[in-house]
Image (tube, rainbow, N blue to C red):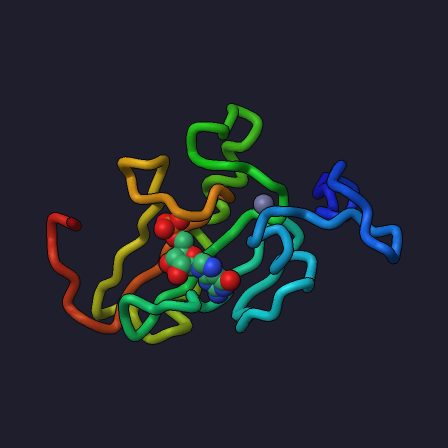
Length: 132
Ligand code: 5GP
Ligand code: ZN
């Protein structure tokens, strides 16, 4: 079952709805605008506000999960789904034959700045390795 962000226990707004402090939960709830390129019952995908490549899309589970560290065995299908959506979006962006990168930053040293699990899809230019 997919829990609506509105059912989480955050302070209620004046309208009586729960207001998440998490920016990606708020995007998923439609409270913050974004350029959404994919939506299904488990996740949504939207363009990064500060793109690091011609294609830079974030694939985000609807349910708040802080990071890879917080995945459990019950999330196996969800984790695979996020990867599959990334590959499908890469194809939709015309990247399938060219190559692209799918990245999850985890924690402080991993460079994670938003504490809601997200998969970066980057492509449209030659990407350096190793990342900084
Ligand atoms: P991280 O550094 O956690 O791996 O990636 C977070 C990403 O979220 C960054 O690439 C950043 O540009 C993006 N981001 C942060 N705030 C917003 C926002 O409000 N809207 C969108 N579309 N992207 C955001
Ligand atoms: Zn969240």
